[in-house]
Image 1 (tube, rainbow over the protein chains, first blue to last red):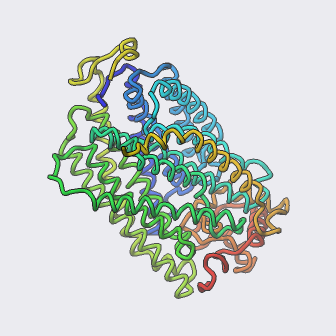
Image 2: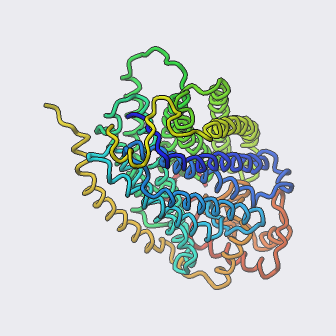
Image 3: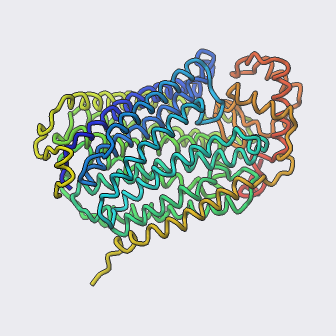
Amino acid sequence: MKPLELPSQRLARPFLASAAIALLLGSMAGLLAAIPHAWPQTGVHLDLLKLRPLHTTFVIAWIFLALQGALLHFVPEVARRDWPYPRLIKTQFGLMAAAGCLALGAYLSGHMTGREYMEFPILVSVLIEAAWALFLINFFALIRHVPRPWPAYIWMWATGLVLFPLILIEGHLYLLPFYGGNAIRDAAVQWKVGGSLVGSWNQVVYGLSLFLTERLTGDRKVGSNAEAYLLFWLGLTNLMFNFAHHTYPLPQALWIRELAYAVSMTEWLVLIHIIVSRLRQSPQAVPKWEAARAFLGSSAAWTGINLLLALLISIPVLNGLTHGTYITVAHSMGTTIGINSMILWAVGFAILLEHQQQGSAWLRSSLIALNGALGVFFISLVLAGMASSFSHFRQGGDFYSQMAAARPFLVAMVTSGGALLVGIGLVGVLWLKYLFQQIPRPLGSVPGAPALTMADARTHDS
Amino acid sequence: MSRDWGAILERTTPRVLGGLGALFLCMTVFVHLDPGRSPAARHPSPLALAGRQQWMQHGCATCHQVYGLGGYLGPDLTNVHSRRDEEFIRFVLTNGYGTMPRMKLSQQAVSELMAYLAYLDTTGEYPPKHWPTEGLPN
C-alpha cells in the first residue's frame, strides 16, 4: 500500500503530541506512587490518593490518544480518501483535551470518585463519549469506501471503537442503588467493565499492529488471511467473555468464572501460533535497523512473555496463589508497556519517520534501555508476588510479613522503574521532536508520497 | 484450487458478529442480574451503604483490596471484621497504624466504615476455601 499525504491526516498530530505528554505525566506519577512500596516510610510525604489515579488515567489516556492519532493518519491510507468531516476531528480533539484538563484539575485538587481506574468526574466521561461519537461518525463514513472483503484489522478497529463507549457507560452503573447496594454485583460489574474496556482498546491496537506488519512487509495477505481473522475472533471473544478471570475469588455464579476460564485457555492457541510461526521462519540476514520494525519486534517478544504469564495465572489454582499479589501488577504493566505501548510507538514512529525509517541512534539506544529496564521491572514484580504468596501460604505470614518478604524485589522494581521512566522519557522526547519537525510541511514536500487535494483523493487510484 | 479462507471468514464476519453480540448481551444481562451466592450481600444496612460512600470518598481502594482487588500498600479488608476485633479496627480508622496515615475521620465516618467492613465480611471469604483453592492452606 503506497503512503498518501492527505490534508486531514495532519489532524493526527495534536493527538500524537498529547499522547506523548500524557504518557510522560502518567509515568512520572507512577514512579512516585511506586516508591512507598519499597520504602513505606516515604508514603507520608507523597499524596498517593492523587498519584495513583494520575498514573492510571494518564497512561490509559496515552493509549487511546495515540490510537486515535494512528487511525486518523492511517485509515485514509486504507480507504484511499480523506476524512469526510475534518471539522469533527478538530472538535473531537477539543473534547478530549477538555476531558484531560478536567481530570488533571480534579486530581490535583483532590476531587476523586474513589472508583478504581475511574477516579475522574463523570463530566470527563461525558466529554470522552461525545468525542468518541464524532470519531465513530467519521470512521464509518470513511471505511464504507473500503471495498470488501475488508482486511481483519478494519473489523478489529470497528469492533474496538464501537464497544469502548458502550462499556464506558456500563462502568458508571455503580452510581445506581441496584449495583451499589450489593457488593458482589458491584465488584463483578466493575471488573467486567475493566476487563472489557482493556479488551476494546486492545482490539484497536492489535489491529494497528496487523496493519503495520502488512505495510512493512508489503504482503497484503498478512491482514486478510485466515490467521488474521482467527486472531480477530480470539481477541473479540476474550473481550466479551474472559473478564471474569479477574474475579475468580468473588462469590458470583460459578458458570461465569468457568466460562472465563474456558475462554482464557483459548489464548494458548495464540501462544502456540506465535511459537510455531517463529520456528517456521527461515533465518534471515539481520535487516538494517528501522524504528517501526524494532518496536514491533519488541512487542512480539513481550506478547509471548506476557501471554505465558497471563495463561498461567488464569489457571484457577495458580490464580488462587497469585491473585492480589504483585504478579497481577506484572501482568498489567507488562502488557501495557510491553505490548500496547510498543505497538503504539511502532505505529507512531512509522508516521513520524515516514521517509527516514531509521530514526536517530538515540532512539535505538532508548529502545534497548526500555527493554532492559522493563525486563528487570517485570521480573522484580513477579518475584515480589511469589515471595509474598509463599510467605502467606507456606509460612502463614500476615500482610506485614508478606511485604517484608517482597521488599528486596520491590526495591529492584522501583529502581528499574526509574530506568524505565528514563527510557520512556527519551522515547517521548524523540517522538515530540520528530513530530514538531514535521510542522510546517506543505503538501507535496514528502518524497514518494503523492500530494493530493480532497478532490484528487476521491478519485485516486491505488 | 486452494480456498481463500481469509475471504470466506470475512464473508461470514457480519453474521458471526451478530451472533456473538447477542451472546455478549445475554451474558451482560446475566452478570448484571446475578446477586452473588451470598444472601447477606443483597441487604446492606443504611449505615453500611453510608460506609461504602466513605470508602469511596476517602479512596480506601488506593491502598487496600476487597476480594484481592484494589491497591497493594495495605492488607485486604474483605474479612478484617471477623479476623480482628472491633476495638482494633476502630483504633486504626481513628489514629492510623504503621504506614497508614491518620485519615482524620469523624466518629460518624468511623462508625459507617465499621458497618461497611462488617457487611463485606458477610458477603464471602477471601481467600476462598473452595474453587479454585480448595486444599490450599489458608
